[in-house]
Image 1 (cartoon, rainbow, N blue to C red):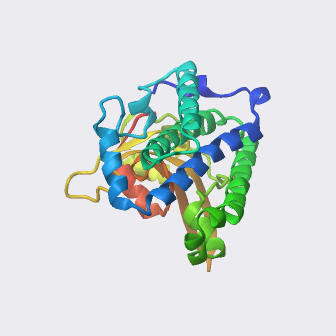
Image 2: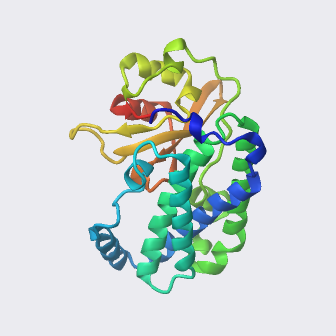
Length: 278
């Protein structure tokens, strides 16, 4: 990707509530469909295989594969409009096939929206991005509290309090304002393989990772579960018993666009076998 400047949304045009509702729509649809599909895993897997066997469907959730590399803002808007129309046409779903397709559409649209509208679009609007995260979290928690028990009473009975929230709701955290300033090298990083020096500077200035798109390609002898595209969604640090605890929220293509909490060692492993694409 040549530049993210073209994706930045002018502050006057940012509608936090509308953006939160859009993100929540994708999260709700994906969450609901994956829960229903988990009741029949064999049939689910067979239908997913059928979907991905169709040449017109990309077996990927990552925007580069679905829309193409370095898309224009107009191409992104067109894709999201098409995805939203398709999701609406499949709502309510009438079959397991509908749920498989709808879940795939929601996952792909969510990653696209988070990358281009949030990470890039709100790059210059720290406070609005924080407000967006808080609103999405509130909408998710309300759904888990009110709708999830109605839709899945057996599952809800096994979940309690914060465990339900952490299991079903992605974490939206505000990056620290107190990170040290990026080094000249980190601030001017170019696309390509990450060197040992790059890795250390990214870990020492984690906010310089925000908005960058990486492709993780570990050798066959290494852990493969995170293979594919990834980006840092947020970073926090806390002092616990006198020790600084770093937590990175990483959006992973390999996990269907879910945001996974990682520690410093795990992020180092990602970076070690990653190529920066933006």
